[in-house]
Length: 281
Image 1 (tube, one colour):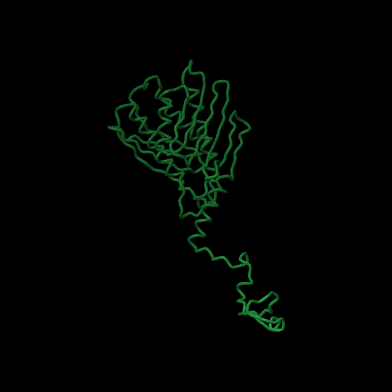
Image 2: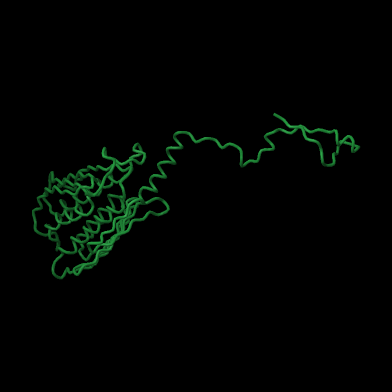
């Protein structure tokens, strides 16, 4: 469709004013429509879903923050501009002072100083094989023994995981991995169900690895399970060396946790439960 408009400006092709008044110019209608009103191309179904998933990832991870007013733990939940899920916890008691920050979408940054060298080494495995950023600082009454610090570090890590997971929308939820380390072979299976449970079956042959009491391995995972709301099964399939058995356990746990916390694109941001909710209860 075209419009005809009369000249109201000097024409290089007309020699008289009467001619100018009679001159008509053909103008396409599309040229009169401002660009900002032109119809934008519609997104394809694939593009729409892609953008929708990104929005879900950024919003649902910010949806939950749990405050524990009846215990010495304070926690916060945040996301950065890239949508990374981060949990940060401060736990202070008469026995320990613990700070934990975990980024589930990190790049294997390990920065742990607990005053227990062997525990620091195990937390490095969690970061390295889970691809999490793990920052742990702790001081405690290690002049007595490592029990309180080991326990409170695990409690704080579990709480940080709880915060970082938020409402758990879109995640795989389940993780399963078997890790070998020389003669040792450990199987870990877990469910981020919101229901804390530990089934632990390790036969560690020595009472200590260095100065670390090997009884504290089970206590570490029980404490972490209690605050994170995780169902965790640990099975020893083979192994004779205490160090190998424990390290393989942390490696398998890290890989299983990585599987469980990663996003399932087919879920499109929905909660991985037939109930429609995964709560820690």
